[in-house]
Length: 395
View 1 (tube, rainbow, N blue to C red):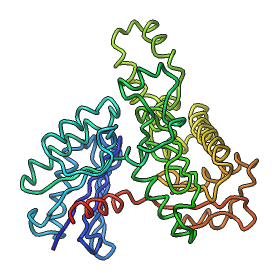
View 2: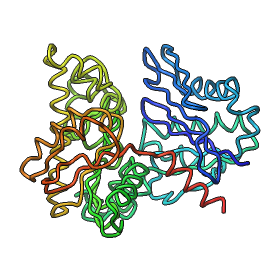
View 3: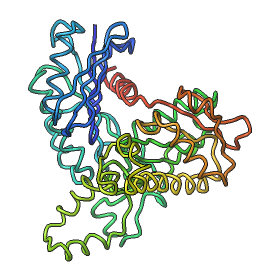
């Protein structure tokens, strides 16, 4: 019996699922929230709705991975690590090098590391995770599924920046986009829920979490996306600034007497976004809890919503309307008030939510019958999308 462990390492979380294949039955799943932050939360779900949860301070990725293996055996989900026959990893940046899922070899691993400039918060961590798994499960094949692959065929008018074209070509500078595994899954699932051929479907998909991005989907394929050359650009995120004027980088270097641009890049990646504006936390739940009493918390929430509305509105214009808007991601899935506010801000498009359906928070339609564009709530399932791509490679 084959068992595939899917590792989905985000910028501040580590999700995983253990699948029995080829049935796709989930034997166990879990998440580590607030990676390397105070109050890291380790959760594992298994058996018949059983759950184990504990909180530790500053739990890093390596220790989190070891805890997954320890708990799988302690809880008798598996008797021995030898039962795991494949490990699949979500890797954020594949650049122009990886346009589909691949088995990980030493050469592939080095190329993933070499693409770290495209995703400085992710690829180094994911490469480390691959190495950790290789040490723990040395005889098990590992696979990489890339977030960027959904966006490799973006129309050039949306993929290419207005730089000297020879530099674009020489250094492969383009909009790569991320969260592609999620946006691809959301597209397929939306087609199922709407009973529509995916190849005729136009969507605006919104993956809203600590990392956040929007995508315009035209005829079932990626047409535009908010993230760019790296995952830093686009909407405001947990610790990432989203779009800024690039002139701010040399300006801050001069004002702060900084000679290494990487220092500014780390600030934009790790100390900005919700955390930077609010001064409280990168976690929307903590920021929103103080928005009524703390002006900076309210400002952070307002900016987060404002940037989403700007992108969603521009994509609806670009697509000349859409069949549906899709909410997904930790924030998008679990915050009914935020969904309502975003839709209210898009009132010019005559989009309306059904208050009861929105508050229920269940997968499916949450728009009212008289809404000009349907609105869907879809819990994204990147792990299922990943394990299916790996299964195709193993055939």
